[in-house]
Length: 386
Image (tube, rainbow, N blue to C red; front, side, top):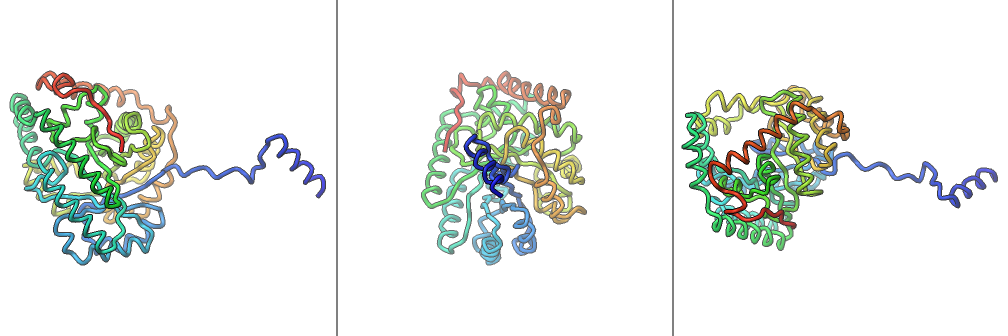
């Protein structure tokens, strides 16, 4: 016993820490969350214990009519009791542009402030608001029609019509002012954006955000996620995609960067997607993109790739597909939590990396050459801190 004490004291004097004093390694994922876009609030209640078990927050769809739905406060109170954090993902009607952007700034402000007052008044636990900054479906329909008709001239004309540097800066300021107002009420504000914006940001071109009516880089987000879904590409190609865009997201946004990973399960039978297919006129082409992952090992590899790039905030899309999939919600969450950061060599896919690098360069250069919009017209890009 005396010898044990002697050697322990000697180890302390020499600066050697015994194994029992080593802190446990941090979790691979700093924050895991799951989008929920369509499920009725009552259908989410049975999922709360599983979400809590895997420490997964909920990014919950909140529309204007949600504030009159008694099942929303019931869900939020049940989530708080279960220990599941909830973010309010604000969505407008389709004919009011659905997402947050220049065309929907006034409607977004009204809904956000009304929702914040409602949550406060009812004593409901909501961590943060999420603003999904994407082209509205109305603009998307025009762009999609131009692509279907193989008309570059029509596509360029539509993009040029959206460009207005002065108005864009005013909308950036208005969105930052709204975020400041929400923070003053005690809420955080996260953003979500398409991965294509990172290609433009890498080349210092904020004009693409203006052309698509979606301010992103100049906004002081608490966190910003980039929508990077697999859609119809192979798993190897998806790893290359995630490797590129998670690296760029980490470079620009540091610890605030997050990645949206998915699709999980199948979304073809969701009625709202039929409405979107009709809106876009995409038909089978639209539905083919809704065929999601079926193998939980693919998700584990995808999350490991993102973590290997240094991004530790993971958002899964979505609860809607996970609960109806053969694997089931718990298997998807278990796969995400099981993931560990992949080394450079494990996530390096030369062909896919080259493909996405060239595609990103051509996207930005093609946009700049065809529209004339660049840092000369819109000024230097800057990333706003919260």
